[in-house]
Image 1: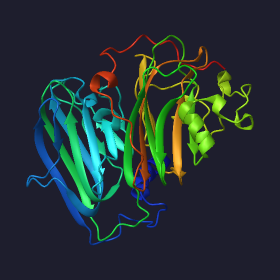
Image 2 (image 1 turned 45 degrees about the vertical axis):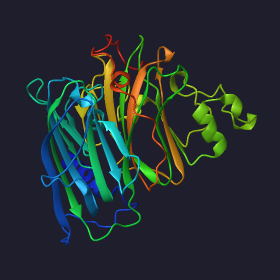
Image 3 (image 1 turned 120 degrees about the vertical axis):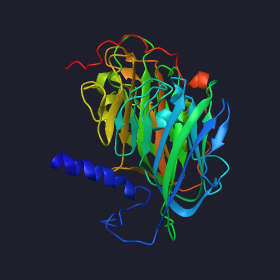
Image 4 (image 1 turned 90 degrees about the vertical axis):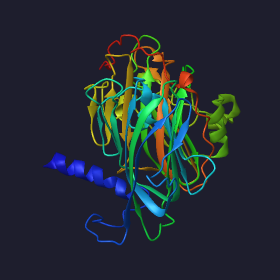
Length: 390
């Protein structure tokens, strides 16, 4: 019963994420005058082209105020890694640049264009039993408030997307609170990570809160990938912000430099400046300990959807639904690339950051083309044990 209650709590948490506080203790029981809406269709997308999603009546813009509560997608394509070559973009309230721009498979919890089982409170991926052209079903449950919304899917494969199936379930509401931020999602990759320097997962400016990170890593050299860890830098001053941007220790005044002898577990240096929130180890952030075990498990708020120890690759996720990471001015999230036995590593790391914020948002880095996003179609080298020694 306790596990069931925890799962229900995790499922209900997204209902309040876009607001600063939970204002309604029983939202499902409250009878309201909201109007339930749906955008659904089946379309094809030629190679290299983008499709703005629309209703059967060819209505392309969702006109609110409203909240998207659920999205469902599946595709039919002869490309076995189609989900890594389809890019989902969303524009809110007539903005010029998208607030969401992420390869579809990564957004739903699995990197490398692969399809694996994900059953979380925020996203789901349910692989098809048969090989391509059948592909996984994908569900999205994080609420997305808007005044207007436009959703686009681009096919960056050189193979036609025979069919894109989609259902967008949303509610038109009388008004939206000014407290409601807009959902943002950003993909970044470091290939390879510069040795001794962390991977940057999120850079955002404005006011909002981070609600999740999806992390994919491909080992490029022997040794363990256990340790590393996350560092959140929240509302830091310009001196620290600029040093983190350039990773230039010499740009810091002597009294602001982190003493190099100050290290954390497995001799990891703390970094250039004190993080606001410092992680202990990479697997610890994703809710595990002493390595990534058991492999391939999916819980409501954290899990490992791919790998890690059998393929030389892994994808893990963590959703901050009950514990959003809030910022008032800016935030930077970085992951250290470290192994307990080999120290600093230089692996291939890509991430999806999820957050709400008031617009406007800072410019996103340009999304690389497919050949710079997806590694070669191999499972990677055989992994050695990623266990941490006592």
